[in-house]
Length: 231
Image 1 (cartoon, rainbow, N blue to C red):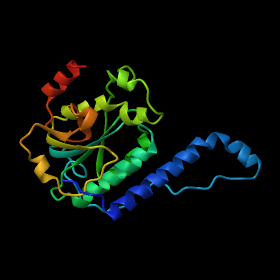
Image 2: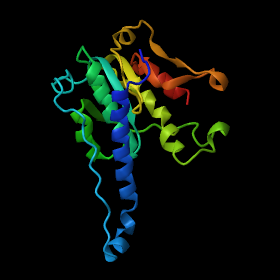
Image 3: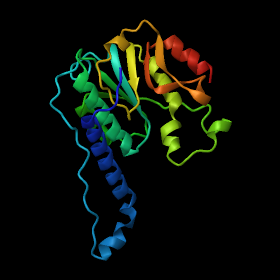
Image 4: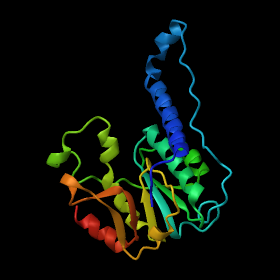
């Protein structure tokens, strides 16, 4: 259901991430601003991340009462890194641009995600659901996961929390996308797949695994409990 990212989508994602990185740089240098102020200098203001479009048609379960039912889009945020906020805004916008059936969007967020992000996420259609992060049974302990670059903990250190997707039992089918993905086509055929679970198989050294960045699954409390029991 995906193809090479079109130029318009690339420009949108690039603009949002650039703004996030610029704001992040200003936040990190805030503690040094006293000296700069004393010297008569000031930090340049950066425009805030804004929703690229806010006049979206209503979505059942998001703009209307009734909660999340039926077929649902989902993403997960587990860090205060604003690049992922930018990505989630771009992802939500890309879904609203191609969605034809009014399926709701659910963003699962952990305690690490600032509450101040909620209005912007909601402006592009995400229903923000606060969840408790699941402990990682392997990150930092498995031989392949004890050494990693500084940003990899945010990228890979919270994968187990994705299992909470199986606990969204009010939905019959969930199409999950990482916050740095974009949807380019209507995925109705994926939602209606008879398979209980579908994801892209990994290749090479990781051939026994799959890519958890894009998944289609059927929620099940029994499956959720069984997966937790394996940890």
